[in-house]
Image (cartoon, rainbow, N blue to C red; front, side, top):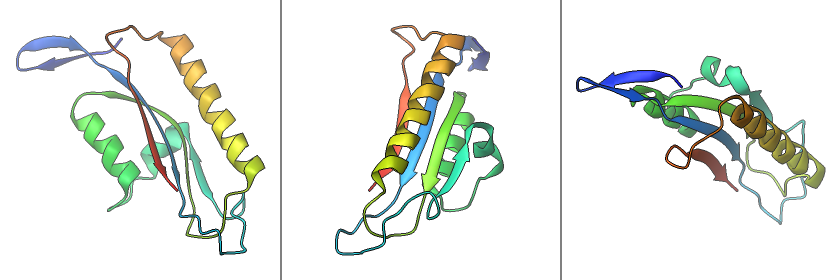
Length: 122
């Protein structure tokens, strides 16, 4: 595990897995939001896609500035539409879980260092 120094003390950096899905669903809107409507970024792309006034960028930057090791998963965002396509949602969910399991296998988390952040807006 990576280490960092805070106020003269050497500490192990906590790892935080980050995933996000942002979409405002309106059941009266006939447009089903699927693969074409979502902008999807994966893993290391998180760090090349910081934007001002963006919740995911703010979360990741805040964690990094506080000394946390950010483990990026999947982030997807779409403008408001109708409901989210079920198969698309299940595929994204499966991908997030697979990445989380893979990353956890690299560095199994301990009981005292367990963190996960999912930014969901629906």
